Image (cartoon, rainbow, N blue to C red; front, side, top):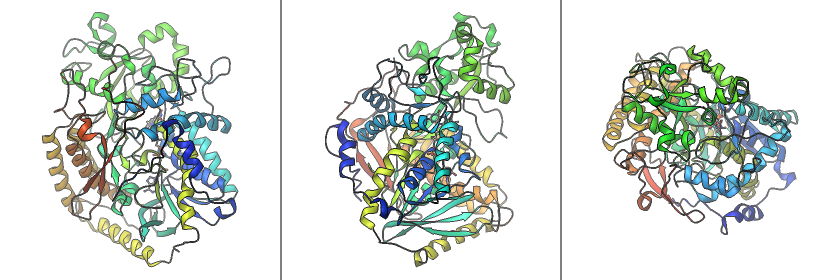
Length: 638
Ligand SMILES: Cc1cc2nc3c(=O)[nH]c(=O)nc-3n(C[C@H](O)[C@H](O)[C@H](O)COP(=O)(O)OP(=O)(O)OC[C@H]3O[C@@H](n4cnc5c(N)ncnc54)[C@H](O)[C@@H]3O)c2cc1C
């Protein structure tokens, strides 16, 4: 297949505008004759569903939570970027584009990233109009702070609850559309399969998580806004139920998967404290605006932090990266935290792996009141979880899996390689290349949902006017049968292990071999282990209860089966990409200072993987990336 991203011609700053002039439109009176399914109600799904319904399309919205408001986006803490230059510190659209391209280590599509930077401004206006309570300066101007990898302050925030407030804004819009009869909500419903008829996406098969009923829903287009897959590591900052099922099921029906190995490991998370823990907690990157990261200079130093004199503290980010200091991008901060711990400099001696994030100087400089106004809820969250008071002793932090830059391949219109199937938000392979900058995910989710998809989807719908596939088409019955057979197989597995224990085993392998540092040997070991797990999964598994009602073990069992297949692809992608770039750190390719060494000639591309059928190896295709607006350079934050 030819993966043409269909990027418009012309100068980079005119591409989107020109594209809008040429995309086909559906007339207002015809829109109500189209059904659009949107799966997912996080920031991407909620903004898309409400925008499409407001335009007059019939929208069906699905999520597995009991309310759209509980989508994982609600957890987003630190903020959302926009090139508004409210701080008058030299920000521009080009600078946001530049930072994002450089931050992603030159592995993203220029045209998409530039469009994202352009649309960032509209998002803030939209959110303010909805009443999102962004933090403000004393004079009433919206306040900004900094995130990693940039030298300006462009992050808009609502204390440490920015995702929640933005989601409430989008949710209110959904509620209005529900009231107007243009949007129907299906909570507690999980997508199980995508129905493809004659090469086009025509609907979905779902399981009602309360009754266990399998249902078919037909549509003219299907939008997946189903989030990311960092839970493949078992321990991650994601909500426990985040999973890859929707995108993986789409992949098995023909949607190509791009850059699966690009996973972001976030530097500032509360360290793992035991085997029975099933989730890790993020401490927002915004804390690195004022907190200083350090470890003791002496190996095995187990003194309390307050007793370690200044001269014996190693502020490793400030020393190694004087220009960006504690605000280096996440991949760089994580890798350095790992390196100092590998060197035996972990805090509190050898009682675990962690570095300090210290507010001592900021508290002295700004006072407790100011610090608590900026980060109060994060300080309380940390205290509740660790029983340590970060106003008195530094945060202990360590990197943890957080975000997937890989995902379904999409073209400039956000359509996957299956016509009529779209992927938006974290579910697509996104605009973040090999490393996402902080506060850029929500920007992408809302750009996709509010401003891009509603403009581009007409281009496809226009061409299929009145070409309908009803829900009684035999393809729906066939897909339903596949889903029922798979569920029956999961229920029939007569092993002894819970899906969670199998997920934990997979997660450990992924963390050890496909995490912050990767080698060919380790990746081959992981592939062998995962192959073995795939075979024995269906014998080892035990799913208690029945499929005819709520059954969380069954839900998880289906998701872990998909994670196993995706894990295999991630490792193969990481093995194939024989270079280091962004978060993808192949130990074989590094400078003597431990920085990444890219191979642009061979890997200046997007890896696109096609499903070839059960038991057959994936087929690799490539989309070359152009570097016209910003010449390739070696990323340096020194
Ligand atoms: C702790 C934390 C803090 C973060 N802070 C920030 C931040 O400050 N700034 C920033 O920009 N980003 C941040 N991020 C990243 C950002 O929150 C996410 O990338 C973003 O919210 C993803 O949104 P989404 O709409 O793509 O998916 P999600 O919000 O994950 O929503 C997925 C939706 O899909 C549905 N779904 C999934 N699978 C199925 C299925 N099979 N069937 C039916 N429904 C399904 C779910 O029910 C849900 O409604 C943070 C992430 C975490 C974990």
